[in-house]
Amino acid sequence: MAMPITLNTKPFSTGFEAVQNFISREIAAFNLTSARVRAFRETKTQLEALSNRDLADIGISRCAIQGIARDEAMKVTLK
Image (tube, rainbow, N blue to C red; front, side, top):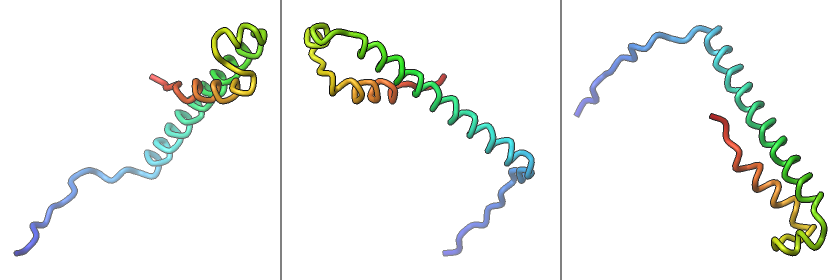
């Protein structure tokens, strides 16, 4: 059985559009990374400011702070 031939009727993107799309994706990635770094630093700073007693009350050890901050940062998404 012969395969039907279909033509792509979408216009080819110009080189400028390709560059524009690339730059837009890179800017979005940069913004997401920046937001995640900010969330990591804020969470880590806030948890490190707590006393050992306060951390024990909420069930967190000092050695777990970095992991918790990293997990929270990975939850950040841009709208």
